[in-house]
Image (cartoon, rainbow, N blue to C red):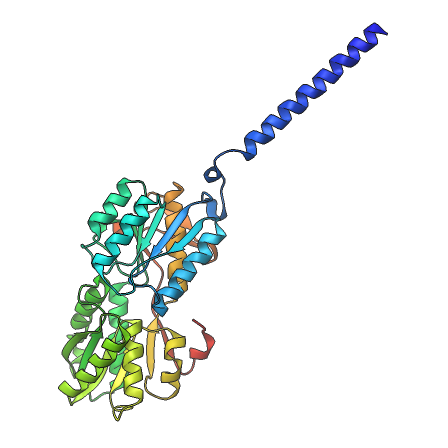
Length: 350
């Protein structure tokens, strides 16, 4: 009996030891750093990703940032949005500083000025944050990646082509209603539009003015009114900004200029649907801003997870959008601009 008891005690001790080791192993597996776990696309989970648009409560950025939120939720990160109510470079600086102090892993920002926020962004990067610009870039030295909605050349060519088609073969005077005077993307597009207008096929179009609505609805509305008063022979307006094109369309639709002065630009289907259907606007263009934000979030997650460094040739998966490759100057291209008109606008809801 003693030998049996001894063996029983030894077996029991071995079982208890095995159970203890198993419990310890389980505790070790579940009690580690949450960031060591991986979510969609191989991302670390728990990454804090903040979107800083040019201005909050702008329909375009609401859509793009919501796309970012969907992506962050897919790879189990922590999403936030913050930013100024007006498109101001100085205001963006204070938000960047706050995000840095909060140990944000990724700052996704659309720059109101390519240089004004560089100091704050580089301080945030020194503190450990990855910086992804989207929609409007900074100086490349201030960020890790730029998510380009479309090439500047593609946008410029598209906008000039649309206004030429709308105005017709006789051409005439046209003007540009832009966002802020310092907006990186707007200025690049405008310069390329000028180059495009110099092509022989557009010889009958004459750019007579460029004005700025500062991405404010009422100012853009007023600038449209002033343009038409200043240039009574104006035949067309290009407004490559979602706030500006919608404000200009609203003014034209209720004026004697409706149908006489053509308008195109960059807008969302939900903003522009009524103006396309009532004949104020024949066609306009954009990309899907939700996809732009979605891609920016995945790019930031890939950077912060160490899956890519931002060098040319790096590849990463962006959920439903598929695989993307980092190009020259640490730029990732979403795709080409898409033209909306009466034949297709009801197919889209954003």
